[in-house]
Length: 226
Image (cartoon, rainbow, N blue to C red):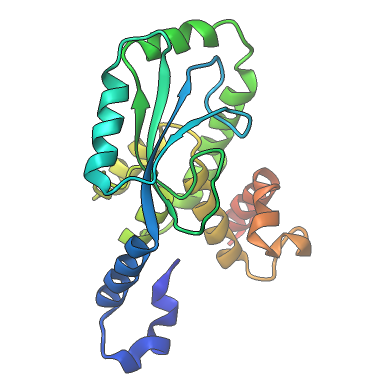
């Protein structure tokens, strides 16, 4: 969330924007618990149909990191994806990782197995999505200076420092399509366009996300005409 626009709403608290954000993060940390998920490597990257084994809730991030390191260090088979997460303490036993992914990776030898399996399937759709992300979403994200809060909300790796220059951001985004960065790009485009949308129904971010290609192309064309 971009807190800057709500600065006046919490001015009565006598806090700076960063102090308020720190308190929000502290509350968030109290409402989430650490988990570790693992799943056997397949040809396609993890998705909604992936079957995960869930470990947790765990006592703290240190215990979660021990489980993650143990699973990542194990030599297969099975070869596995591993993700350490912080998830809402809402009593719902989710079948897959959700919330903030703190750390992720492969077990030993899993990358090689994944590449071998991937070679047997058609990756054209995945590659096309990465190309469209680079052509349409990346220019949106480079069109303005991003705050640390926006970077943290969009980037999957919470331990990675924010880029200091546009070139560093470009290199990071060059890794390919990422859902968090796409969500941020959608919000930026909706803010830039206001009511000037190709379809008024796309004013809702969740709906606009399903049409991100034509929406971003429209934004690009509008920027060129200004």
